[in-house]
Amino acid sequence: RTCPGGFSHNDMQHASQTLHCAMGTNFKHGGGGRMADALATGRGNFDVHSFSLAGKAPWSEGEATRRSVISGSTSTGGFKPDAKVQRIIDNITQIEFSSVFAKEYVNQFDESVNAYKAVSAALKSGDSLLQNRNGNYGPLGSLQQVARLIAARHMRRAKRDFFFVGIGGWDMHTNVNGGLNSRFGQVDMGVRAFVA
Image (cartoon, rainbow, N blue to C red):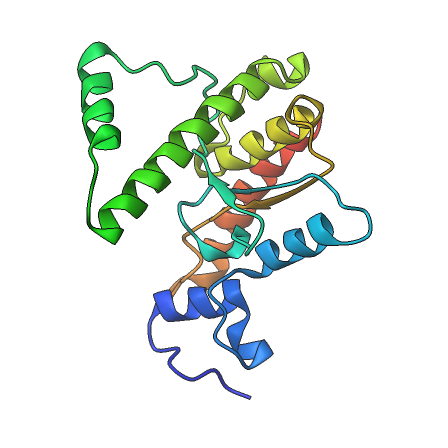
């Protein structure tokens, strides 16, 4: 069957990440998030972490499992805003808003900052082999970040992890063979981050 409303790239991405066409319902949570929920609330009662390295893509968001939106950058510098930026952050997060949207913005902002701090701390203490590994993974540096998060799983006390990584550039209208060869070469470079 066809998926109604799949007219734009955004509609198609949302449909594939939430599986709402395949399931016949309009889910707001993603496929990965629902799997994470099942593991977290099932018999094993696993400590499950879900990450999006591609912004607020819905795939990794569950009902009980909140996704952490983190950077695909491999930096472990931590969150160290200067005084000017810290004043701006304090101004945003300490105001009492009456708007539901403003409150949600503050909640999302706080969650992002806290996730970034926690992930940075875990990555700093992760596998030294991955810490010191050099290489230009180009647009697929986020796969190296995933490898580092997996290596730091014990520091994060995670039993299961879900990752969503967005890799663009596959919508080719000309020179498909050359384009695919180039993209798969980049994927190969990114997968090397998993090989010690």
